[in-house]
View 1 (tube, rainbow, N blue to C red):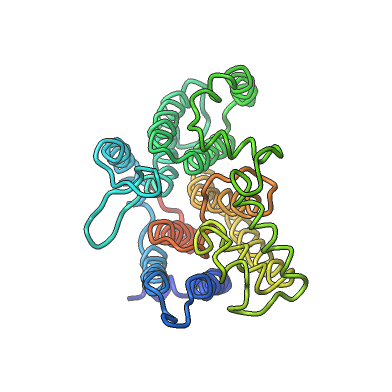
View 2 (cartoon, one colour):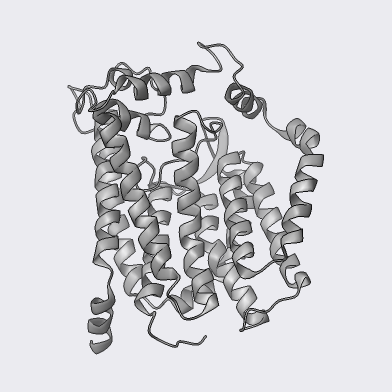
Length: 368
């Protein structure tokens, strides 16, 4: 009990408030995106409501749990996640042309989301056991790069280019923070440029279309339909928006995937520029506060561990908002805490909760 009381003292209520605010906004606009006069509360809204309530519970449980076993067991569980990714390719549930889920009856689980959660403990625990002082030779990083490459390939096979990119970028960012020699990043970039023709040939036709659309090609009523409708919704919102539940692009079903990938377009149409800026401000405050507090952690491995849980959320946010604004290709990434989707919602809450746990122990000198 004294230990629990001490943890309550260090609980970061401002961060929790920002998380709850974003999740509440997401719930509100999932309701708007799926609202019908004859069915005000859709099944999607009810699932999202359950996801937010259970997600906040997950966040609190992770916050007050000891993060050290998470790092230890997360390392071994990552290999189980690789097995689930392989199983998904063989026997996974198919939806919207992709095979990304494992059907458990009541819910569908997306193993690629689990891989995002387990990647930080995998990297941190491996490096910690190699050298507690975080002083490494270049060959130390080779096993991580191999596992990261295998993970990305398995996710690409589903196919899920967006999540593969997020996992890859998160891993690369973590290795950068861990001190991987900068020449590795230069060599990697050169290899990527050289292999571009091969990578292009390996893409699915719809993935190629998304890239060509980003470059300005495609017909308005075909390949460019999604981005055209998104920009119309955003632009028609003006400064203050059309009003809650009054977005015509959304209500007349011109805007595809309005409850998931393009929910930010719904917000822009109904709440306008002011609503869009509010969302950006909430994310900026959340990330700034978390990274500022992470920088105050006394040990390099705890900084790396905590950052790993936030990096994939930051990357997802940037990619999602960038793609609905037409600044990035459309890759099917949900907006963290706001878009509809149970797996992504739970993983995001769990990631933020574990980060909270690490920060609550910032004055301790725990060892593994």
